[in-house]
Image (cartoon, rainbow, N blue to C red; front, side):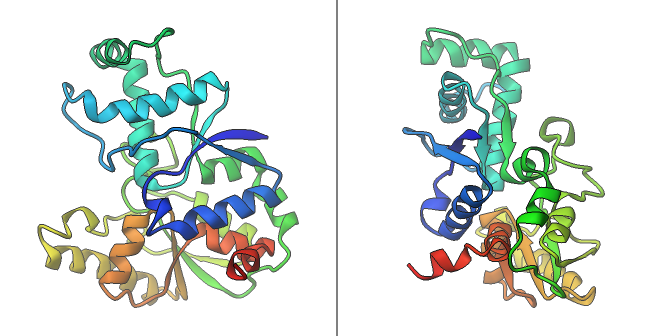
Length: 264
């Protein structure tokens, strides 16, 4: 199984582990992630103005590149996934966006949202299957109490992202169970950590992030897992009361490939 892969900027610096452990795990599960040869920053935030075409063009280019290979496009970072998925929806449903983007890029074949955009977690659930992952586990995380932190961008807006139930998601908890660990359910798992207001209002960001980590700890969590580099950074920066790791690190550990990276 081969997929086009968009890593995004953060996975080239602050979030290298998110990328490295994902690649090692994909290989172990028989998945080939074929990185797009020429990709640009997604912008990090989806521009809400309907006339803001230029900031969305890098995402359109990535979608077109995947279409040319007749492959689905896999993303890892929650922010990148959010921007690319919403841009794809706009290209399929917004005539103004579609017309202007296609005219600007002068595509030989206009792009109309044909590429399927998948988050790595969706790939694990729907293509590989959690049962197969469970069977592939070499080092089950038995006894570990793990809290899933979804944050904002994987889930919202629900009709566009179509990732999971916005109010009561379960995909990461099911992933945690497949690794042999015990998922911790807590009320703040899909609330904002305040990452996007950190520069403008550091105290507000600290309050929001501490509410998340403290709530997870109060419900017995020993570690928090996330798919978002910004969420991880913000939680750690604001002195999370629970260790915070990427979900791919736990996956690599359970599959027995984490040491391949640690040895480098």
